Image 1 (cartoon, rainbow, N blue to C red):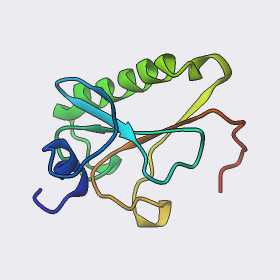
Image 2: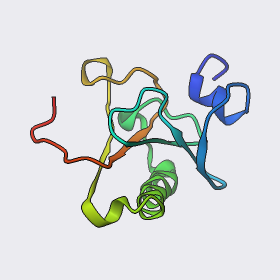
Image 3: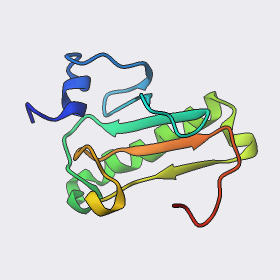
Amino acid sequence: MDNCLFCRIIKGEVPSKKVYEDGDVLAFEDINPQAPVHILIIPKKHIESVSGIKEEDAAAAGRLLIAAGKIAADRAADKAGYRVVFNTGADAGQAVFHIHAHLLAGRKMAWPPG
């Protein structure tokens, strides 16, 4: 997707502060953090949203969650706790239509979320 911001980040056309990368997943710091730790974790394959995940994407989706756990441990967020959030659709707050998880940590999280 030529006009997808996250695809452009993956290609190196748009700079990011990378914190993790493997063959299937890229993670970088959010430019508008909502917590002391706010990392976006994306698959390198363009998938529009959680609703767009197909059976053949199951392994990539799983690797995204494994990456979230590794990043949380690297940031010592696994000690006090962290949140992994997927916004799906505009009404849920999805602004970039390339599936991404928000890893949030470093402060007490409220429930229910906003």
